[in-house]
Amino acid sequence: MRKNDALLSQIDWPLFIAFISLLIFGMATVYSVAFNEEHPNIFSFSEKYGKQMLWLGVSLFLGLLIFLIDVDIYRKFAVPIYIFTLLLLVIVLFMPPINGARAWIGIGSMGIQPAEFAKISTALLLSKYISGLMIKHQTINTVLTAVGIIMAPAILVALQPDAGTLVVFSSFLFVMYREGMTFDPIILKLVNRIPGINLKSTWVGNHFIPLLFIVVVLAVLTLIIGEVEFSIGFLPGIIIKGGTGIIITLAFLFLLAFLYIRRFGTKRDRASLTFIIVFGFVFMTALSSSVSFVFSKLARHQKDRIEMVLGLKEDPNGKDYNRNRAMAAVGSGGTFGKGYKEASVSSVESNHVPESETDFIFCPFAEEWGFFGSVFLVFIYLFMLMRIVFIAERQRSSFNRIYAYCVAMILFYHFAINIGMNIGFVPVIGIPLPFFSYGGSSIMSFCIMMFLLLKLDSQRKDVLR
Image 1: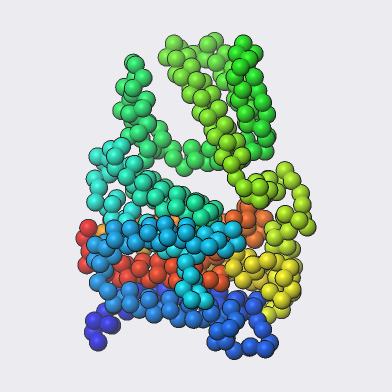
Image 2 (image 1 turned 180 degrees about the vertical axis):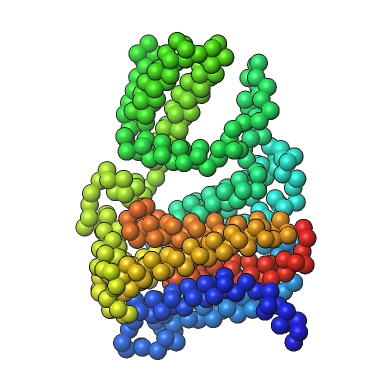
């Protein structure tokens, strides 16, 4: 009895309450949006809300088991768990496609989506690997190994294909950066091969976030400008595709900077600027060409979604129907909403918003509870994310800290992208809202992820490494 009381006292109750609140709101929203008058009982397993209740019950039972298992088990079995999920990701590639993707393994009338559980296994193994390193003595091999842990399941997910889950795997790169693992060793080795250069460090490690932001902005500008063929006058055989306008703009700015330095600067300034100019042109050419190449390899519907978000194409009643209807549903809620079970635009029965119980679950919630209800829901998610970061920073064990940051980044990606899809800020890529969206694999994986975090945190004082 005392042991149970001690365990309960160590649980982070603010996070637990936020977590359970989201589960309750999510279940209530699924019941509302998929309500069938012929089967009003929430435990009617022939309806989606009945199945969701079943999955939720299984998830809570698994959470109880997690709390009964010794916390060190998760570190010891991180590798077998990771390998097992990789095998599932391989097996799923041989399953019959559903909605154009091989992402589910059928079990009777039910099915599981291995990619959802691969996020957990990747987080565990990445935590185990990085926690066993001396970050100050990282090498190319250690960085590439960490990237390999992330890339192995990501590649298998890309083969399904599942663009939404694939994007989420990039969240682990931020965890690596938080733990001091950058691409500096690789960059240093490559740059130092140039005769006369012997760098001790690069600026990538200290400027990772600004650099990533610049890359994203330039990539978007490349798509907005479109593919423009540009032939260099004295080398007529060379063609640069995509992002030419950016390169020309940079050339003009570099020219102005060069003239200024030549007039007022020193030899060292001119040498540094020359290196920056050369690097800038190579970087921009490579980036714009890479973005154009990757974009050209996307499926037609994926290209359409990106172009519509960027305003390059309009088709509100055709290919952009989902996003258009989602924004209409969110907006129809007004300030205070229409009331519980009063959603009209986003209900399953009206079918104005496809997948309103899964990827677009935020629409019926916003329609029922309006602007203030939506803000309240966003506040709960933000509180949860900040609480997880707080929990991560108080851990004695580096394994626990890294896992907590993995959970924070996974939840942030899902939360930001899903709501962004619902309000038209990001392309529709099919990604569930944590603890809300209908789906067995989704609800179970998020619950397991959260219960693991709560369990690790509850025994933080007993773990020193």
